[in-house]
Length: 371
Image 1 (cartoon, rainbow, N blue to C red):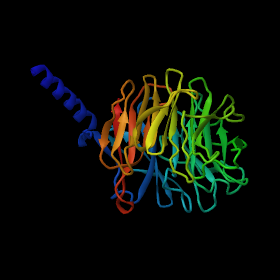
Image 2 (cartoon, rainbow, N blue to C red):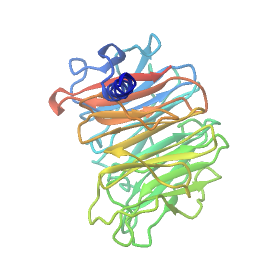
Image 3 (cartoon, rainbow, N blue to C red):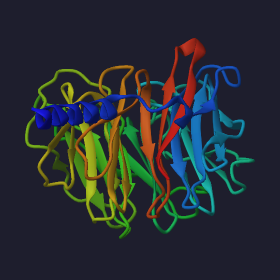
């Protein structure tokens, strides 16, 4: 009888540990509403030395702030740039990548429909003038895009493109750390004439330099995730492959594009939502694995494997899993639009950043789940 009681208590203790929120002391205020009002849609990048950069939007202004004291505090945000009708909300908003040479931030204006990039070479203290990435005017007006950093410092940007009838996936790469951008190349055009119109695409580089782009398709009445790869910085792509074994019949856009990341095992881990469940795959042909009920998943790739974060329902709780474990752990009870990041092809901290509060009183929080 004693043995069974001990086993029952151990199981209960494990469940409580898994689902109890992190302590308040482990959560850092990145930007408080008293500093910048209406701060929204955070995105983050981590350098190999552990420095964390967080980009976000507030009204029509893009900001970036840098961590200090090993990520336990952040400096006041620095203004990156201004765009009329800055695209924000539903995973719109700025994107950011960083290495030792430069930090690059991108964002889209709903007003002129263009995608712009800014660059800093002094740890985010000052920023260049904006450079337009798209070469066809107003074709980015949906406001949804992604950016990825290659091991050699090249940068790739991809977006939902409207230069033709229907929504396509386009991209451009920069060989000089975001200072200039290549001719735009089509990543994918759906046989139906359009991909899913309001789900953001995602992109990542593998350690071997290969580039991988993921998006939600609109094909035969289904809204499933697809993946294509490139060996030449996005100039040409492989045939697109559907992810997962099942399909999602849906005559609407779920506004949830998932994410993907490269791990040290040589795999590309993808995370995405189908209906009210979050899934992962670890290769384009791999079997899907259920992570749990939820939405808005994000993944960080490390040498140890994939760290994954998502919301169990709209506006929280915010959950995550670590490599080698299928047991979700809770960060906080209320959160929106979480991202989880780690350094590109290097050891270093794994960080979750999210938005919390109301539109009128929003703030940005972060926590380091692995140093």
